[in-house]
Image (tube, helix red, strand yellow):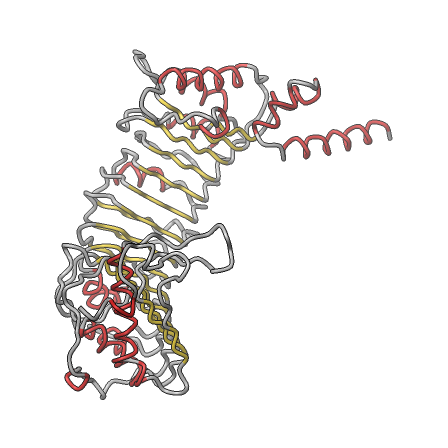
Amino acid sequence: MASSYYFCTQDIWCQIRSLLSMQDAARAACVSRSFMQSWRCRPNLTFTNETMCPKEDLKAPGSNATIIDYNNKIDRVLRNRPGDAAVTKLKLDYHVPPLVGKPYRRLDRWLQIAVTPRTEELELLVWSKEASFDFPCTLLSDRCGGSIQKLFLFRCALRPTFQLGLRSLKTLYLRDVRITGEELGCLLSSSTALEHLKLVYCDDIVRLEIPCLLQRLSFLEVSGCTNLQVIENKAPNLSRFWLEAGEQVQVSVGESKVKDVQLTQDYAINYAIENLPSRVPNLETLNIQSSHEIVNSSLASSKFLHLKFLSIVLISGSYFHQDYDFLSLVHFFDASPSLETFRLYVIEHPMDDWFEGDPSSLRRMPQHCHGSLKSVKIIGFFPQKSMIELTCHLLENATSLESLTVDASPANYRCSGSKPGRKCSPLTSTAIVKAHKSVLAVKKYIEGNVPSTVKLNVPEPCGRCHLLKESGVKPFYLMFND
C-alpha cells in the first residue's frame, strides 16, 4: 500500500510540475530539491526569446551579447539533464552567435541531447540570414522515427536521401527550408500517418507530388514557393487545399474530394472560374485573394454545383485595373446554383472613379436568378458604377436574400463601441470623408431597391474612433458644399 501511495503522489507532483511554465519551473527549482529534480527531467522544453530573455529582443541590432547569454542559458539547462531524461516536446529558437567559426556546433549537440525516442513534437527555428544549417536527417530516422508526430522546421536545409520512417508523423510544416521536390517525396514516402502538410517559402521545390499512400492527408497548404510550377496530388482524402503563388501554378487534385479551397494569386478570379469547376467538382467553400485582374471576369466553363460559401478579397492598388467590372462577378453566381453566402472585400480602392450620375443609366441583368443566396457582405464599398450595379443586381435577383451589409469603411475591424480599450483600425481624414460619401451613395442608389424581406445594414464610420473634427477637416454637413 505504501509503495502504491508513493507512486500515486509522485504522479500528482509530476502532473503539477508539467503545468508550470519554463520560468515558473526554473524559479521553483531554486528553492526545492524535489522541483530541481523535476526541472532537470522536464519533458516539455521551450527555448525562445520569451521564455529565456523576456526583457530583450534578440532580433534587434546590437544584441550580440544577449544572444551569447541566451545560448549559454540553454546550454546549461541541457548539460544538467540526466542522460535518460526523455523530451516529449521541444521548441527551440536558435539565434546564430556572432563571430563564431562553427556557428551550429552547439545546435548539433543540443539536438543530440534533446531529441529522444519519446519525442513527439519538434519545432526548430534557426534565426540566420540564410538557410545554411543542415538538419541531421539521421536524428529523425534513428532517434524518433516511431514517435515524432509534429515537425516544424524554419530556415534550414533538409536533404533526406532515404526513407526516414516517420510512421507517426501527423503534421509537417516547413518554412524557408531548402528541400527539393524529390527530397520531399523521399520524406513523405514513409509518412503514412500524415494529416497536415504546410510548405512556405520552400523555393527549391519545382514540382510537388503528393503520393497516394498518404491516405490520411486532409489539409495541404503551399505558400510563397517562388519556383513551384506543378502540384500533383494523389492523396485520396484531401479535403482542404490552400495555395498562394505569384504566378499561376498547374494544379491537379486527382480524385480527392476537396471541399475547401483558398486561392491567393494573380488573376485568381478568372483562374477559379475557368478551372475549378471541373478540377474541384465537390467544392463547397472558396476563398479568393487577388491584386491583378482583367477588366471582366470570364464565363464559367461549368458549374460549381456544391459551392455554398464564396469570399473574394481584391487588393486594388496600383496593379489592379481601376475599371474592373464588378458586375461581371454575376458569372460566378450563375455558375453557383447552391451559393448561400457571398463576401466581397475591397482594399485600397481608387478614389477618382466615383459614380454620381442618373440611376436610370445603371445596367440591369434581369434574366439571372440566384435563388439560394441568403447573405451578402461588401466591405470597403465605394460608389464605382459597376459596384453599385452589382449590389442592385443582387437585391433584384437573389430571391432568397435575407441580409445585405454594405460597409464603406476600409478598416479591418471595428471597435465594439462598449469595450474601452479597443479601437478601430486608423483611417486618414481623406478615407473618413470618402467613407461618409460612400454612405450617401448607398442611400441614393441602393436603399430604394431593398425589398421588405431583406435586412440592410450600412455601418457608418465609427463615431468614437473616426471623428471628422479630430481629423482636422470640416464638419460632415459642410464638406460637399464647396
